[in-house]
Length: 104
Image (cartoon, rainbow, N blue to C red):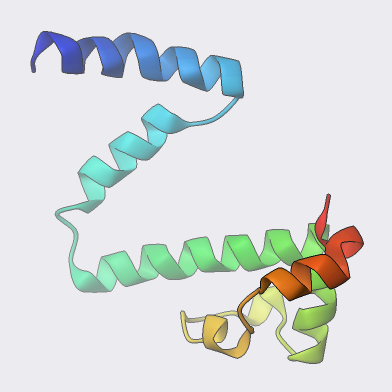
């Protein structure tokens, strides 16, 4: 490991994580591990993260709760990555019209 890479990994990332209360270093470790995973295992991770994202949006963002109810998508029933195709893409116009329901 080069000196610069070592400094970033061992000093900068941990400092960023403390200041921003994020998990940059943990994300880096996850990426390093998962780069060698099988396609099946990567898809499982993708689906797990999708369920977590949908669950968060449903529980915390009124706009998405309304969209999910309209589309009959329940976070606990999201089993594969096909569900995002059912959710329309958020446009600038959507943001303008529904800003109060999008801001936490």
